[in-house]
Image (cartoon, rainbow, N blue to C red; front, side, top):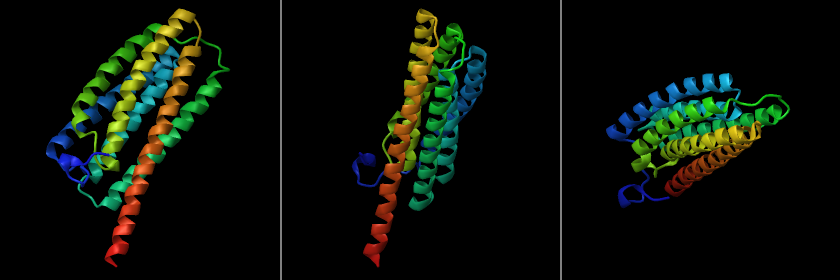
Amino acid sequence: MAGCCGHDAKFDGVSDDYKRRLWIVIALNATMFAVEMTAGHLAKSQALQADALDFAGDAMTYGISLAVIGASLRARTNAALFKGFSLLLMGLWVFGSTVYRVFYVGVPTAEIMGAVGFLALLTNLASVFLLVRYKDGDANVRSVWLCSRNDAIGNVAVMFAALGVWGTATGWPDLIVATIMAGLFLSSAFQIVRQALAERREIIDHKHAEA
């Protein structure tokens, strides 16, 4: 993990510019959650609904990140742990519901999947552009970047799923992509939790050193 501005201390989000960018990204993600969840139901697409949950998780992540900016390192690591476990639960839910949908008869609507997936991709590229300069930092800041990256990857995957559904006239590409996205949620959750626990250990070691 690179330090902020070449120093050992990790960027903790204390920046007016960073806060403004987070507010913009929160608005974008909340809007796309509503759009994708509605479209996912209409198109019967598990991949779209999984991506909508990713937007919801991101909006929550950014909101929590804003709330703890400037707080103690312990508060920030606790927030990162909460977000990590939330992503873990989200990934397990998507995986479980996808397994259930394997037995559901019905082919998603490829046209809706493709159109909404493209709109979501544009939204996420804008979010990534806004946050890329702050991708390195403490666990709280890092979780923001990982969620933004997940969204962009997820939207590309949804568009591939739409092409697969259109080409095969089956729902399997949609289910496969949803499963991959669930794995991405779980991977990011483990990364966030691992870094947050490492930072918590640093707090404990520092207190012991001062004692």
